[in-house]
Length: 327
Image 1 (cartoon, rainbow, N blue to C red):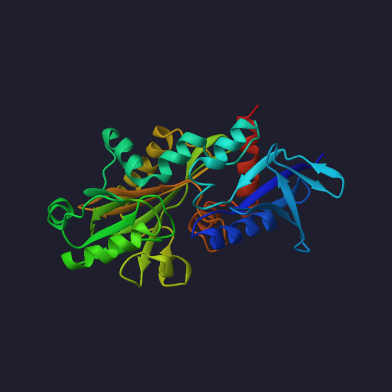
Image 2: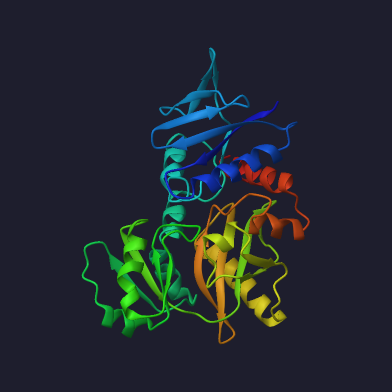
């Protein structure tokens, strides 16, 4: 008997359009002989199932069901394709865990931790995971440019602490550019992380639990045409993503081990994509994504294809892992 799969997409953040695209690719790719898949749009003002004719049916938030003209649809599993809040920050995970409804990806605590760049980097530091020098700033704090310069130097990156797809990020070269960069980042989040510039090769490493085993996917090197790997570089073709990365076998081996260690230290499930920059030959962690892009152009699906895993197999495996975890 086919299982009913809810694919949640959209969300409350600037990333909602990317999420809708990811969710649509999951919907198209899931094996139709195994699953009945439903596109569920999650927005602040409505949670709805959208059918192929674009007709909307409300989701009952009390039990996450949909009433289709008198028939109540219950879901066997949720495929989470929401980038940013509330799908990547632990909110939806907590909701589904309260309902005892299996969902792809990590659990609530891990989602909340990895979504918070500052907390995630701080948690991993005692395990020997290295990262850039950083300065933390919250809304309402006084801006001490001299202290920021002393902590991270210039150039530096001003980032929203809890945001993805490079929203709210600015590369700052001079002290007098800080106020505008900080203002831009505060539009995305009320917490900021200001990091030193790491000059080196940037790589992205996907790790998944595949058929019960923690599996590191082929490494992708990111070469941006812009000043850094910003939104345009990620989504508007202003970058090259080269898989496998053009790094030495020693570097590749080390970054694979670090990415796998991060996955296991944080007790992740499902997908992770960790970003690193090599400085002085050592991989420095930038961030960990637990709901990476799922489009055909996205990094992790391309890495999976290089490893011989099709989109259909990748998404099918994620659902089966989630169902297994809940047995």
